[in-house]
Image 1 (tube, rainbow, N blue to C red):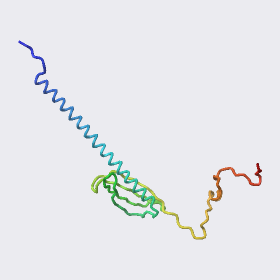
Image 2: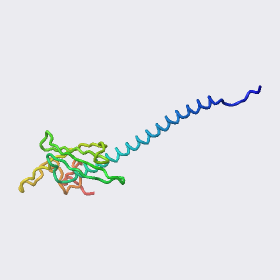
Image 3: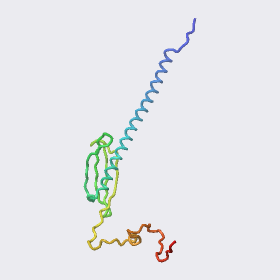
Image 4: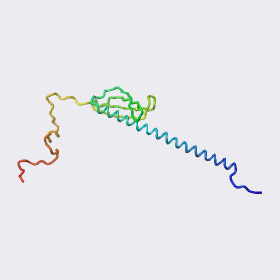
Length: 161
């Protein structure tokens, strides 16, 4: 009798089962990588939205309210992001706290959260007290081209060349 060379049906089925299990694991890992990358992209964009809003609030000359909240939308990367800012008092009466949260939709989980602080503007000085009595103001006059710590020559000791 002649012996045939090749794989038996059982060997081929076992090889296909091993290949199917390995391909399933590879596809699962690739899917997890894509999901993680999309989530990290969303977190990065949401943190940029939060930073943009906090910087806009910090640059606004008006003082923050003692308590309350604001909410709105921001467009970034062809998407609309929803933000909400909560203003709170702090232990220091001259300081306010703002916490901003950013979501991709109204019902989505928080993607970015940021806290910032802003001091109340100083009280206005009466009209007669507009002078600057700080040590830096006395050391260097506005006309002086030299830095404050530069050595100064006495004009009476200067000799012509």
